[in-house]
Length: 279
Image 1 (tube, helix red, strand yellow):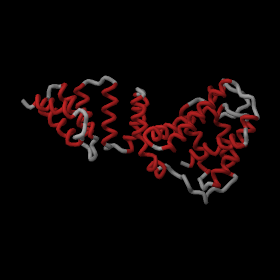
Image 2 (image 1 turned 30 degrees about the horizontal axis):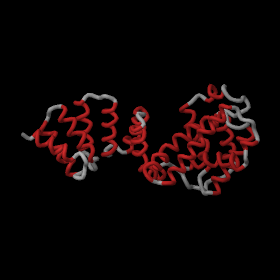
Image 3 (image 1 turned 135 degrees about the horizontal axis):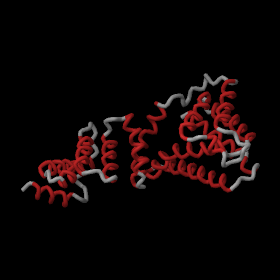
Image 4 (image 1 turned 120 degrees about the vertical axis):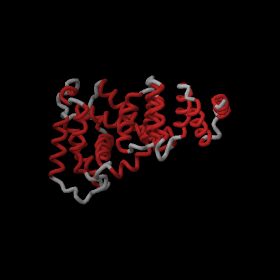
């Protein structure tokens, strides 16, 4: 959380100090900041609440980190970047956050890109990731942030945003971005290995990728054998078993789904299936 606050403080300083009016930006940079604007709008959408807002909030962290990666090697001139670093940290400290984690942000960015290669397309005067990291390290070294513990670690922050993780996965599935959905879900299941909805969505991704029915049965069965099985897992398990002509098992799964979702619009159809398979 403190790392995210540092990014927000840096960008807010650019805005408050009207840095965009201090430089002539090329078309590539203009496009980049349009992307950042999209991230900001996503945050506003999250504030509005509801399913769409939750999806937007879940996507915002990843998008803003990607955008800041570009900004770190291109953005404004070195002088303005330093100004945003310094004043942005002041904002973060005044809000009570632990600013000493600032250099860690660049370790995360380095994992995803080669800053020297990326910087070649931008102005040579702009600081590279290593220079930006070194600058933050010097600022942190010259200040004592020990009395500003807010946002340290990830456990508390994660506990408050974890609820959004499944919304993000569902959104990516709906957008047919199965690869990214699988990555996000994999990270979530590492933290929550027996999560019913998570295991159900794992099976859903596999189904949309064209996985064989027999394997899908195993995946949906795993989703139903959790402490909090997702009702739709019983539905999909019943249909997969029916496709495999395992009628008694299919009927049991569909009955369980109807017990969980008696108001389902598919209830008459499934009752017909159950009757046919019980003969």
